[in-house]
Amino acid sequence: MTSLADLHALMARLGHPVAQAAVPSVSRFADGAPYRFEIPSVEGPEVLEAVVAEADRLNVPVARTSQGSGVMMLTDAEITQMARIGAERGIEVNLFLGPRAAWDTGAQAKLTQAVGAAARGNTMVAACVADALRACSLGIRSLLVGDLGVLDVLRRLKEDGTLPAGLVLKTSVLMPLTNAPTAAVYERLGATTVNVGTDLTVPHLAEIRAATRLPIDLYLEVPDDQGGFVRFYEAVEITRAAAPVYLKMGLRNAPNIYPSGGHLGVIPKDLGRERVRRAALVLRLIEQLDPELKRPGGGPAADLGVPVI
Image (cartoon, rainbow, N blue to C red):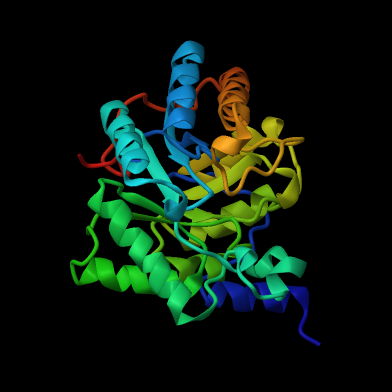
């Protein structure tokens, strides 16, 4: 049988060495910061306004917000308002694409989240493209992709000029990414920022960092349906190994609000505010444990998918 040493040597020859320890990353975002905060589940303009106000109150530099219900769940006026807020504040506004298997008529996605964001059939792929075209026409420059084929199609549409060349394509946590070779595949297929598995160790993150130049997105507090971990005290080691990294602030013990809407009342706004508060807790902890880690900037950066009005 092949020894562990032989397997490690083989992986190294393929360009994907197995990390024996977390090697500090020397990569950074365009503004020099090793980490940024992303607030997920910002489902509409009212939630975005609440998140921005809470970030101002707590002095939290929010670089990106992301949405999970999908472009199709927003009106043109709502998308335009979100784009305007993002452009004014220099914040990347990321919207999820279209329909998905978990909301479709198929049975498999009802049993496993592994295919929950997949596009079932070419008609659903086309719907995702329609969402992308609509969002970009309204100023959005960052999209959340849940299907590998859709990712490749969007890459091709960027290359031929149908979609903006600078469009950020962010992969969803529902697209399994748990190792370095997969990260390299996602990059080749057009991803510009990758959401990795929620339960990866610091050495796993170091392996992925060695395989790709892309920013890594990682839940530091994980929603219950994705594991429910709270990893605040790992923030410094995660940042050292994975930089540039988006620290995503989900919430444990929080309701699933997808698809969101007015029927949920103030819940999405309250959840958004609490996610910013969680980011404030993490920011304080990082600055206590490693004062030398550069604090994220509060303004727009060249590599952010800030909306264009």
